[in-house]
Amino acid sequence: MKCCPWCGIKFEVINRKTGRQFGGHIVTCSKNPNRTAIYLAHKPKIFRLCEYCDKKFQVQYFTHRFCSQSCSAKTVQKGHIHSVETKAKIRNTLKIKHALKPPKPKVTKPRKSCIICGAEKPSRKKYYCTNCRTEILPAYQIASRFIFNVYDYPTWFDLDLLKKYGWYQPVNRGNNLKGVSRDHRLSVIQGFHQGIEPQLLAHPANCRLILHSENQRKRQKSSLTLEELKQDILKFEQEVGARPGS
Image (cartoon, rainbow, N blue to C red; front, side, top):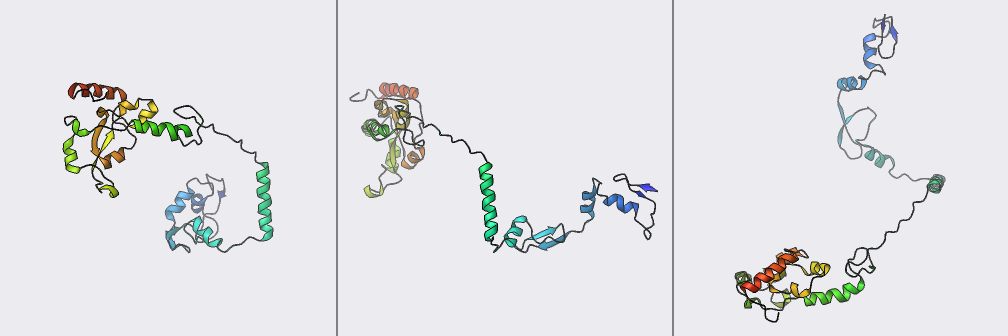
């Protein structure tokens, strides 16, 4: 007599013709922790084509017709229409679930104030209020423009780059899209945010000649700080001399 170590069933008959076999039971016992691994190791690999997407997949059970649950649902539910009674049951169930579910508290995010004057902004995505955006910022941009001639300072600017590419001109005014333009090393937007005087941004020491395409990629970034700009202004006055009108 032999006893299964997993389920405790005793086997008195071992002959294959007269009763159950102890060796076959101990391998396929439902309480055997290694049953699945043993079954998969000896199971023959059978492949089949999915009835929906024609994808080849390995069959785990002989009744499998699809490679995934998605293909099965797309096939089974194709053309399926709920009856009026079923739709009413679904609608009533959803209403009950919605009624039992507690409502979420409404959270109102406070609007951030204008970074310049502190007033309330019309939108969270904007940095400035309407007054700063339409009146103060345009006036600051005009005051920060370069009004000097780069040819008056040949030792300070790279005029060889200007001779090679020429000034940038749009399509309707010369069509030189690969030309050179003047760039604010300390950008106007950052100067506006930091409250810097526009006269410092308009100084020749804050200007450099670069290709207009590079100037467009730079956008609102700065290549130096305010302290570095002040040091360059002192260096400019020592090497070139005081700027006319300053």
